[in-house]
Image 1 (cartoon, rainbow, N blue to C red):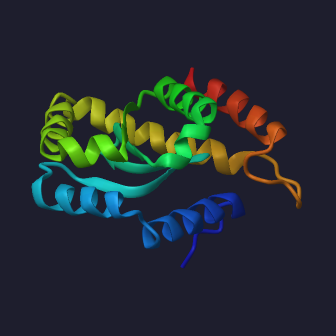
Image 2: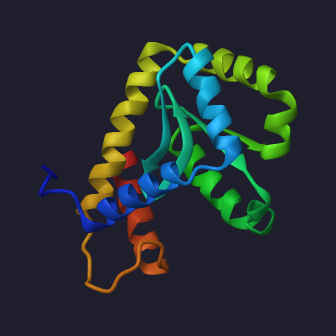
Length: 166
């Protein structure tokens, strides 16, 4: 049963993440299979981190993004997104599909080694931070026709998150 406190926007993000999992690219499927086989840590695939969705999230801290050709036209958006997520303490490993296919074994080692450097305390803090992000995201006032990424909402969310972060 769905929580009554969840906003329709969180539900929309989760639905979109579910659709992304179902329509994963071949490179995402390959990385998913490698992580299942060789990762020493728990990870999520197409994880909602309001107001974004990360391709992979390892130990609540390490975001792995596999970028296809469509990201070539989204450099500014990706930069803003990375900055926002970095401000919240996430570590981002952004790879092109070509880099992943060429260096996949080394990348799995890099993921495991990076995740190994996160202390248990840091991981638990990140988990709590993610819960605060959800709480901030669901507590904002909504109007009926509001889209998730419109400028007013993004500004309200940024203000609320700055307040909570302190």
